[in-house]
Amino acid sequence: MTTNRLEAFSDGVLAIIITIMVLEMKVPEGDTLAALKPLIPTFVTYVLSFINVGIYWNNHHHLMHASNKVNGKVLWANLYLLFWLSLFPFATGYMGENHFQELPTALYGFVLFMASIAWYILVLTLKSNHPKHTMLHTTYKSKNKGTFSIVLFGLATIFGFVQPIISVGIYVLVAIIWFVPNKDLEKEV
Figure 1 (cartoon, rainbow, N blue to C red):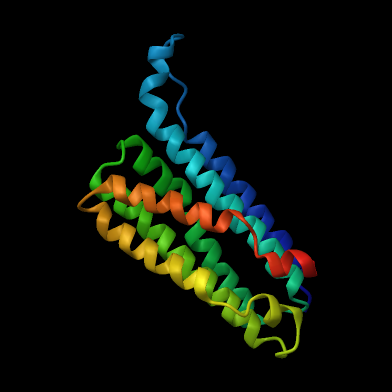
Figure 2: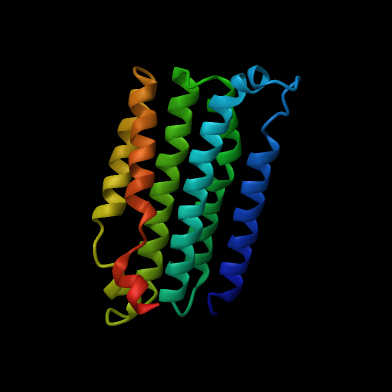
């Protein structure tokens, strides 16, 4: 089976996730700049989550173009990733509405942590479904970025309970790391 249907379904789910996140932002009561001030944490969290969803969408697109077939295991691995990504609107709203307090910030990190594990599983599952000489194996040969992200999100989850601002800094750092797509893959695709 080709990747077309999997990619189309995933694109639709990611579009819905982004839509839900923006709909979670409440319209302020009042028409002054002061009325917007309480929304700053929610907006900052939304921007961070929007970037993260965009990074997953971009990398998912590249991953699917490096692949030429999927099987049942890949479909389930992809659904596992989409499950964790579908929790972004809740985690985003929870952290933003509670102004980066400990538990909401840690929960946000846990969702990012689990999504990064799910991404790693999807890549490994796809690689096991393709011969060693294919573009997928040559462009996804390094596991450093994925492993590093998992470790950082794990640390950020723990720091969320103690020092949430460090967690937020880690979330931004990982987004910056992933913002630039895989150069080898960009050349191939």
